[in-house]
Length: 507
Image 1 (cartoon, rainbow, N blue to C red):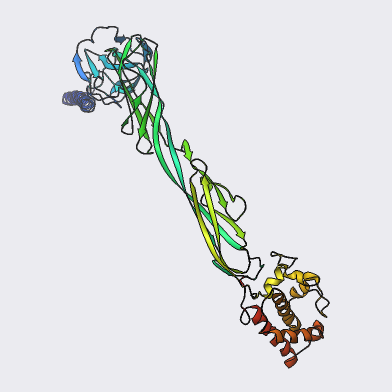
Image 2: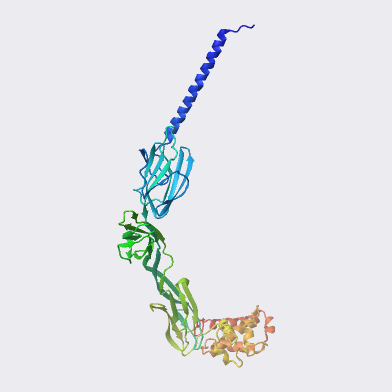
C-alpha cells in the first residue's frame, strides 16, 4: 500500500477552502459594486419627460378612490375611463426598471399621478403646470433596496375636467394704388414743309405704388363642454400680436354638458405682420376649467384693392390708349402722332391722362413740340425721304408726288425706268444714278415750294444732261466727263440737305 503524505492532504484542503472563501468574497464585492452603481444612477425622484415633474416619495398606500381619483389595478397597458374622458397608459422596461407613459383626452386635466410600488408611492403633482399637459412619460415607482425602480403594483389618476376650445383666424386688409403718368416724345422742335407728314414717337410711362392699410384679424372662438358637469364661462380673452380683440358675445355664459358656445371676434392690427392669435377661456366652475387655443394668421393677398386699374387716354390720339392694372405695372404705351403742317409757327401740345377705376382719381402729363412751317418758301427734304414717302410707301404718303404726271410711276427721261425705280436703284459707281437721285429730290422739293435760287442753274444743267444720256452711256464715263455729273449731284445734295438754299425740313 502506497503511503499518503498527510501534510500534502492538509495543505491541499486548506488551499481549496481558501479558494472557496475568496470566490464568495469576490461575488459579494461585485454585487455590492453593482448595487452602488444602480443607486448612483437610478433615483426615486428621477423627473418625467418631457414635462419634467419631480415626484415626491410618500410612504404607505395611495389615497382613497373617489369620483375624480381613479385607480388602475392591475396596471396594464390600455385605455381606461376617467369619468367622461379617457387615459391611455403604456409600460416599458428601461435601464432603471419599469416606467410608464400616459395621455388623456382633451376634456381631462391631470392633477396628480400616484405610482405605487413596494411600500411607497411617487406623487407626481401637475397642478402648477400651464398650459395643462395632455401627456407625459418616464413615470416610475420609488427605488427599491436593489437600487432599481420598484414594479408598479397600481397607479392612480387624480383629475378634473376642462372645456375644449378651438378657434379660427382670418386676415383682411386694403391696398390702395397711387398712379403716376409721364409722357415723352422723341422731338421737341420741328421744321416742316407745308403739308408734310412727320411722325413723332411717344412713350407714355405708367407706374403704380401700393399703400396697405386697415389690417384686421377675425374669426370664431368655439367652446365645447364635453364634460358631465355644467360650466360657467366668465371670461374670454383673445390676443393677436399684442392687440386684445373685441368679442361679439356676452359673458358670463352657462354651458350645460354637451353644449357649445360660439363667439366671433375681431382685432384691428397696426401692421400686416404675421403672428399667432391666442384665446384664453376662464370658468368659475371648480371641477371644469377653461382652455387655451391658438391659431396662426398670415397676411397674404389683400382682400380689397382700390384703384388697381386705370384707363389711359391721349387728347390727340383719338381713342383710349388702353386699360392697365397694377399687376402689369410699370407699363409703357408706345404710339406715333403727326403734328399738322400748316404754315406758321405754333406749339403742338399733346396730353396723356388717366382715370382710376374706383375713386376716379385723375392724373396727366403733356409733351410740347414747337413746329415751324415756312409760309413764303418751303424747306428741303432728302432723296431718302422722297424715296420712302411715295404712294408705294413704306412711309406715309407725301402728296407732292401727285404733281408729277403719273406720280412715282412717271417715266424718268431716257432711263427706261420710273422715278420710283430710279430712286431705288443703287448707283454702284454709276454717276447717272448719283445725279438722278439728287435731281428727283430737288424737283420734288421745288414742287413742294422750296425756294431754288441757289441751285436753279445746276438743276437746269442736270436736266439737259439727263435729256441726252442713258444710264448705260454714263456708266462708262471717266475723268472730267464723270466729274461733271458728280459735281452737279454734290451741289443738288447740298441743297436737299439744307446746306444751301432755304434749309432742310425735319424728317
